[in-house]
Figure 1 (cartoon, rainbow, N blue to C red):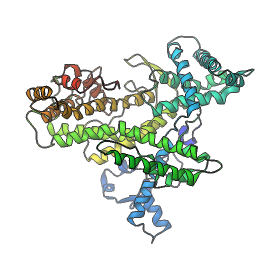
Figure 2: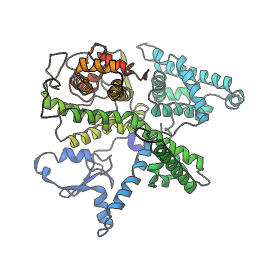
Figure 3: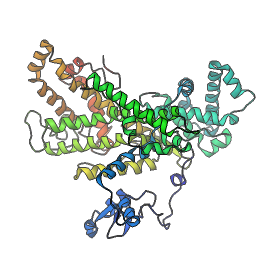
Length: 553
């Protein structure tokens, strides 16, 4: 995979930081400038260096403000200009990690790729302890997959297949296979619920294809960079679109909840007008109006993803802060837990558990907000030529254990931001990556894709409780069983906040606890016990069918 040199090369210890980069780690852009040290730092390094001693009293300012003061010492931005700049800079940075939506022709190849991956037994034949040459087995399996795919293309479009494959070898079709494999990776990022088994095979196959010995024997490269909104517009000199203020209107999701038909229609018209305005303004010989719309729709897809995956965290935080108080413990709905009781592995009083749950939900929100970026970095970590893996029995079968340097770096930055906002941090700050708990970046991505699958069904059930009271029989049942709708919500939430954040769920005591990924393990453990809960019939009445994205009846 083609990446910047900074991705695959280590920075020499005696090399000075380039202008605009952190003087400590040297590979991250500078975020802050210390007035006493007279040096620039990234946010994480500044926090680590200035947390103790006399440096705690040092003052700082943003690196952008420092540069602005040097270039324009007397010029100041008025609040409106600052706001406009903040709005216009949201999309340029995020667009680097927003995959481009697939068009009709690409979707045809996607269906064929999925069909080919579904019939291959790649991981079964490659990931074993056989003493035969792994490189030869890998090359054989990759060529077999390519042959299956070639046959499918010929069967679906004979003319196109003849053009591509007549009297041509695999290496002569290198660009075609790179494009097809890139389509699969791009589609999965935008649709996490799709290609559940096929995606793992695809990534492991591509990771093996990057091994130098395999690449030499194969004769061609299978990996190409993922197409993003930013890279697409950059190739066509259209990045100026991302700095337009109306792009916020053109790409936002229109949510119908609590709005009249006229309001919804007015928002749709305003959005369509903004899209049309941007398309006309920036179309050129290298960038058509349809391509501009395609990019805007791709950014809109990202906004829809954030609402569907990040917003359940917001809702759960809202329920926690609305129905529970950190310093006031309700006898019937206390959040306190004790290790050894009811399967709990942590001991927290009500206030400590309240803070622990609150900060965990906010950390998940931060992670999901940057999920596309983390997914892109995970893709690069897995497909890096300088990042080999090893097969290890992790206690959950034979797994590929591989370091995740880029994902780890960004996760630590995200954790630092969450800790900074929280003020005090309860529990461990350990992030398991590249070990037996989270063997590789693919497992990491899969793990955090489960957050919305856990929280969304609970939020939907809680939101639908009011509708149940429209039925007199169900209303009497809830009042008799729980004392009312509010009490029912508190009963569900108190059990969730206690049982899903108690350090349980690991295979042994030492792997359990309050580490960053262990918090999610506890939540899944609570989900597996939902049928045993006294309020489970209420979940069923609201239409609940499971935590695995099955939908609502």
